[in-house]
Image (cartoon, rainbow, N blue to C red; front, side, top):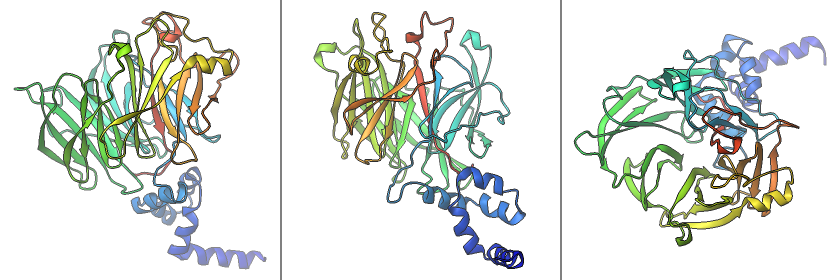
Length: 401
């Protein structure tokens, strides 16, 4: 084709907004970020929230209603630091660091379908006694972030901040603040920030949470509902669409464990809630994986995994070498191509392995290499196996802030 004819066709495509949009929707996210520099027209189109929403929908699996994470971000529990390790779940997973955030000292609080909730802290990291002074919403892919301004001082009472966002349904997100009512330690009120209107709904919801086992800091957004973990026999979730609270049961520990739980891992896969629990034992290698029923009536025990079986597959692992310390450092949940199945990702002895429920087999997810391990020795830990990791799913998309 002659250069003049190619130039004419390119000009026709460039002037046809609908055709240009359809072409750009089919490009990878990272390419679109570069193409913002082509022209003001392309910058305006690619930055439009409706285009970002359409691109996210176009990029995920056809017919699937849920996004797939491209990587996991691991942070060490009880260590206030913006640093994290990256576990790629796809070969192209390269996660940008948060070097564009104005605060150099912050913690990751929650990941929700491409957006992150960050907590800025002020103080000496070595003291582990940092004061929270701000929160931000950010998208690591686009390197955009927004500081949150609360309608009331969040330091007045005990409070918890969570994020609710589903880019397959809407380009807008909500920030939910649960605050303790001073007169009654079991009564709470809720403020909701709505990005669509850039406004807060203040104290429109007051509710009761029985007992002292509610873990409002451990929230999971799934199917338009914000769920909270709980260490008692029931918990709560907030239905964002109906704007109502509902009670949900929590799993009952088996009698042989005397109800002594060491660690709990709360998460979701493709619209389903999961809870993994390990119990106090001399050799703590068991992991009970529970799944919530679709009608929220009960949890069922999906499987009782034993890390001893993983050592039979991966002989280099040395688990259960310290008494009463779990042989693994953290758990996450991710989906499979088979939409009704899942895999439990576990960081064990510095390597990343998983149990694939579809194949009923232990597999290696990511090995950092000879002599390398996830996690480093800190003064507060005697050995690597004492470290607990918190995982955050990273979704590469153009979601607007």
